[in-house]
Image 1 (cartoon, helix red, strand yellow):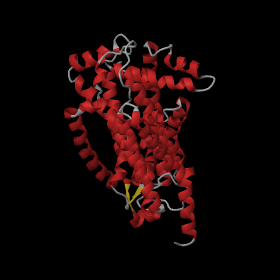
Image 2: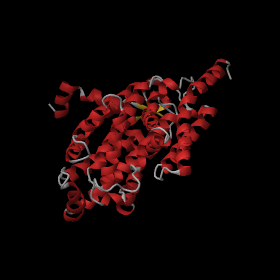
Image 3: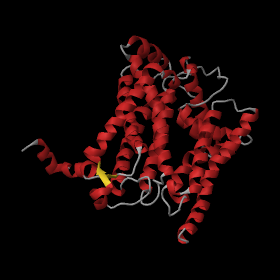
Image 4: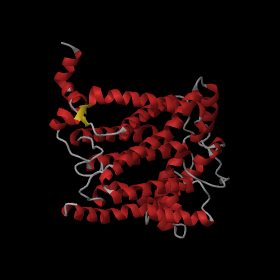
Length: 394
């Protein structure tokens, strides 16, 4: 008996391959934006491999962490710099491909029934990836890492009743110190990656059950896709994906070798010093828009914190905010305009997040934050207008 027969008898692996690959059909009317889901998985694999290498030399100790990264890995270990650059660039690029993947889902209505579970599990993956990036950012124990962790953990103080105790529990101390570093290290290398793998599996399974969305938001049965409306995921669709991944890897390693500095803040090459606060504290570029929403309500810290939390999670509720019977943004003129304003506003907030929150910048941040929320609040109104239009046969 062949090994595959032995395995199939016990785990039904042939049936699993059919469901996940050979008998799963992707609609034909999709574009290159549908490749970003595969790119997210590719970048995650790069992060895991480069992260395992860095783990071999990294010291999760407040007295040793900075030197283990900036001296041991970067100078003493052969090609250590390459793995560090790869890990840092991959962490940044992960959010670029993730944001494009999510924006495609929002524009083409990939959160609409029956894909709510696909959207929710995808959004949980985004939150987990954000937590992984945040915990990993502290590990080099540089000046910006330290103060970013200090600032973000301080936000939890505003939670009623349990806030101050919660901050001490998260840090393991009254300030960000050695205990914080070891906690973040454990979360970053064990707990969060395990959760990411589990929710990725659930996300992929949910996609296989309801099928991929398409540019027109049409629903096809498996038989329709099998006989003209779709192509097999394996090997036809994946052949194209391998080409996309090859082009992406050329771009990715160009950044690793020649443009890696965008993923490494120069202030982070100074050791963490809890007695010296940097002039201007800011997170990595992928959190700047949310950070700007926090600062946008500069006249009230409590309001800023509520807005910050809302800005992070409000998109998870899209299936219940947008009830329009029209699925794809391609066929929704009003929605299309709102979507592009939202994207422009997100970029605007990201740029503002790196600037000092003073004078005109502070007010621009406030206006940008209001526009951010206006997109989500407008969706129920747009849905009503489109329902009437569909009911009227227009």
